[in-house]
Image (cartoon, rainbow, N blue to C red; front, side, top):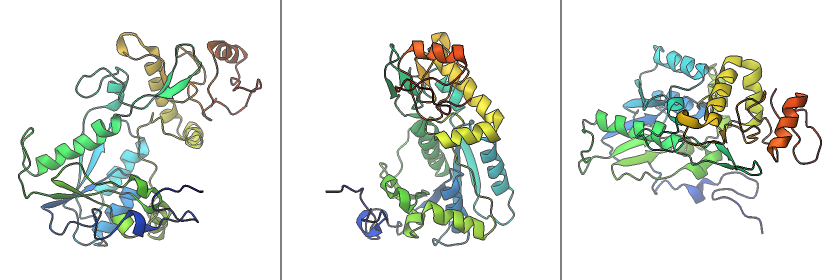
Length: 322
C-alpha cells in the first residue's frame, strides 16, 4: 500500500478538495477587521503581493509586513527596495525586526535571553559519531512574533492587552499547492489565515511563470544567509556566484563551533558534516550532507587538504565545498 500525503493523488498532483475546502477554515473571512499580507520576499509571497495589488483575490490587504532578520542575502534587500520604490504598487510595505539573528545564535540566546540556539543548526555528538539537529525557534521568534506584534500595533492594541472580542484580522500567507501540507489555521482567535495562491490552485512553478510573463525578475529564496535548510546545490551556487555571502556564512559557522563565553552550546555547525571540533577546517560547510565518523578522519582530511571520506573509505571530490 502506497502512503501519500494529504491532498496528493496517485500521480503526485495535489487534489485540493481533500486538503482545502472553500467552506472550511481556509476560506476567506467574510468580514475581517483588517487584512494583512505576510511578505517573505520570495517567489510565492512576491507573486501573491503583486496579484493582490491587481485585485486578483478581491479586496486588497491594508498593508504587507516583512519581518527582517537583518541577515537576509543582499539580493533580498535589493528586491525589497525595488518593491518599495515601485510607483505602481499600491499596497504599502512595512518592515519590522526582532534584532539581528546572528547576534542571538552566536551567543546561543533567544530574544528573551534564554540559553538555547534559536536556529536548527546541526549538532555533533562528543565522539563525533552522530549528527543531529538542534531545535528550531528562529522562525517563531524572528518572523511570526514580530508579525503578530506589528498587527497588534497597527490595530492600536498595547503590548500585554487582549485583542477585543469581535476583532478578527485576515493574514494572507504565500503557500502554494505543492506545499499545501504547510497550510494551517491560526492559533489566535483574532487571526484568520488565508492562502490566496492555494485558492487560485497555483504552484511555485505557476508563480514563476506569472512573474516571467510580466517580465518581473524572479526573486531569490528569502532566508538568512546561514540557514541550515540551504540545499547542497544552493551552497555551491552561493560559493560560486556570491563569495561575500559564502564568506559571511563561514564566519557564522566558525562562531557557533567555537563555544566558550560567546556560545553556550558547543559542537554546532551550519552543514550536516560537522567535520571539525574547532573552526579550523578549510571546508566548514558540507555540500552533500556527508558526515565523517570521527575526528581522525577530519584531521586526515585537513592534512591531505582534500575532502573527508564518508563511510566507504574513499574520497568524494564533491563531498565538501572547497
